[in-house]
Image (cartoon, rainbow, N blue to C red):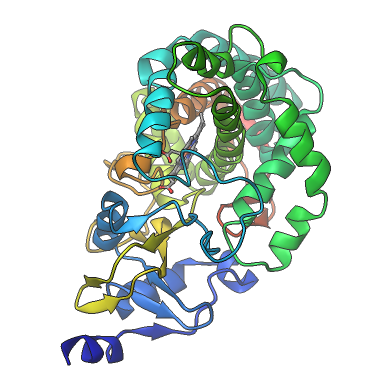
Length: 401
Ligand code: HEM
């Protein structure tokens, strides 16, 4: 019985990838999982995990076998009701996904997003000039949060009041992909009012006439979407477009402070700025994981996975797989880091990546002009999250140019 033998020989791990110890320092655990095999059974949750680059990429590109409609977190939507109505893009498979994705691909294409460049650069210059004047700032609150919270909701066309709800909402979304642990419970403590505020901002009536949000409603007018679907997609912007970039910018600042010679290289050659952000995403991935669910039994590296089983894909572990990367644990802004898994890949690959890249380019171009170096005086404090990796505080005295 070949399949029984395969089942018996599956690598098993007792690791809890949502424990505080793991989330504080996931890298040794990533290595252990990569070395255990192409797919590993995580006993504690009764799920599969993949940590090697090839298997992660192959699963993300095989949506027929590894679906998203049962949820991209631990919870299986076919067995328990989701905490919010499922996303009609992230938590959907074709053909629904194809239809909604087409609209967002158009609205968020690099060319469409380039229209925002002047505004994003101006806001970055203003913010950075202010922070340099201060000589010391908190990399998280004053920059990594402040900047996306200004430019992105402005671009979507969300009014200024109540924006303090956006980060708690993101925390709810990204913690909810994990188990019902302490991080989930904390994030959900004030869920009702936060969710209500978010929904109130997603209607046609609430949006500015010239923002990205209204462009989704134009797709309704063109017969591509239903009115309530458009509101759901505006919600997707607010779920997926803020915390991801907040954690990404924070991690980028951390890397530049932690590896000062890399910051010097970047200042000397600003043409490296774009590639440097890709290297940050590879090296300190703000989005660490996403799940899939098998639609049928499938063999992975000689191990048989059953139908309807949850698979945890370690994007961040794939990013440091020595099978794929030379010196994977070295942060090197000159590296060609494209091919990292932090934006995912395949049909669900991040549709907002042009926005994230524009934000990081605007901020780091402004910093490169004005900051000789950052000084990491103390150990920054981490903010733990079931999906995201980043910081709570990052005190950064700086040396101005
Ligand atoms: C550094 C910042 C970002 C990172 C690391 C990131 C990461 C990701 C990843 C890994 C996925 C794939 C999820 C999956 O395969 O299940 C994804 C999808 C998505 N992202 Fe991003 N993202 C970022 C910024 C943004 C921004 C700024 C927006 C909005 C403008 C956005 C909107 C979306 C949406 C709507 C999806 C769902 C796409 C689909 O299912 O077809 N993201 N993102």
